[in-house]
Amino acid sequence: MACLNGVLWSKDIRRKRKLNIYNALIKSSLLYGSETWRLTENNKRRLEATEMDALRRSSRISRKDRIRNVTIRQQIGLEETIIKETEQNQLTWYGHVQRMAEGRLPKMALKWMPKQKRARGRQKK
Image (cartoon, rainbow, N blue to C red; front, top):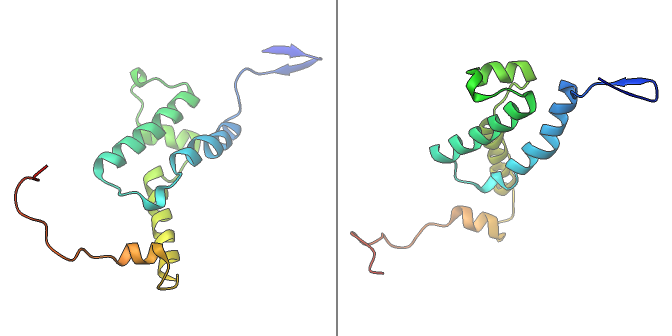
């Protein structure tokens, strides 16, 4: 504890404030453009690992402490994972594109189908 102008200040930031910082800085950076991503298993693992790294650091919990991710989420007060939020953003974007006019580029790109089948075997170049 430090004393500044007669007020005691704790070095620890309150959990609610940490959650606000997480939502404003980390989550917004991780989810930027997530509406158009292709969510493969590899991308899901990387996203979740990055999110949990940020949550562990803000909680000052090391991987060596062997505390499960679910427990950390409960302590912080997060219900949804970043994967669920990404999927929700993608569904919202899909509905938005479906309501667009037929001539709009995002809608044309979504409905595009290749004209011919790819050749069998390895690429020439």
